[in-house]
Image 1 (tube, protein in one colour):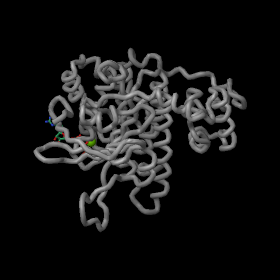
Image 2 (image 1 turned 90 degrees about the horizontal axis):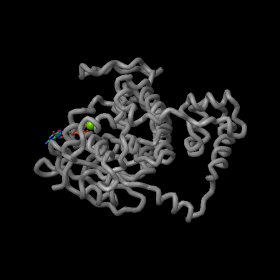
Image 3 (image 1 turned 45 degrees about the vertical axis):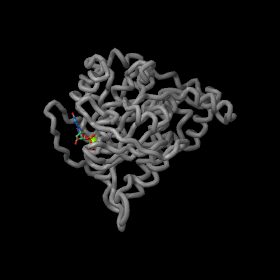
Image 4 (image 1 turned 30 degrees about the horizontal axis):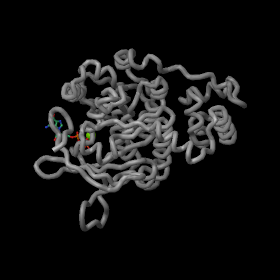
Length: 352
Ligand code: GTP
Ligand code: MG
């Protein structure tokens, strides 16, 4: 196992999670029970051709609890996660697709599937417009930028706005918040909920928080999130930050390929969640200095092509004039590059 960096636990109410257990602390689970009560139940996978009880157990142990989650994974991913040979994985995926009647689809069918895409207001009109109406489900949105630029603030905010009823731009659903840096602050949720006229206590109950202490732990915690997503009451998965553990642990050049492979698997899992459960995924990323960069912003997102290709839309946030923040859309499958200015206040991110 890779070296576990000793992390200082800053908050006294945070408990060290045993290495690799991936267990979400019980008190957190309790607080969200009402909302996530439907989660945890998978289907009987032995209905699939070629899947006996042993294979079914391997699959469910690896977090593949629904036909959708299997149908939307790749043979390599399924094989690596569950330990079944890749050739078997291929057959299982085909069987799941057959059963769900999805495989090749016409453009019309694809169009219809796209129509089930929902949008979550960010709480800023300007940012919503930049994103073509808010954060999309069935997609991964990345926000990257330097320290203190407001990435974590935005994560807190959208964990609240996703809970707004549809007529106010939300999904009326909760959020699963994976916190890798220990920067989740319930106090901020309370303030933001108040701004949006939501009951702070229910706003907190609708957010399931899981702290991840290492990149391995982050992978496990994310795998274990699936039963809660399968409950279909989660509209948003947040990973803040996506990459900090990976960067901290895989430092040498010789480990770069391994790191990128692992990140790639991780991002594909997130994308599968987004597709299988029609939810939005929001990830934050750091910036790295570009060697020899002379003009413009001497920064680019970390993680290279694996993240660049893996995410659907990419936002860049930086400090602007007078304490404001500039958010720029730098990648989107169909929207023009553009930018917007916002401010961070006690009530969260607001239009200026
Ligand atoms: P890293 O995680 O360090 O990379 O940074 P980040 O991009 O996540 O920054 P974060 O979202 O934590 O932003 C921190 C900044 O938000 C602070 O420096 C403040 O400027 C601002 N901020 C946070 N809370 C408040 C608040 O209650 N009121 C106001 N006005 N600003 C706040
Ligand atoms: Mg942060």
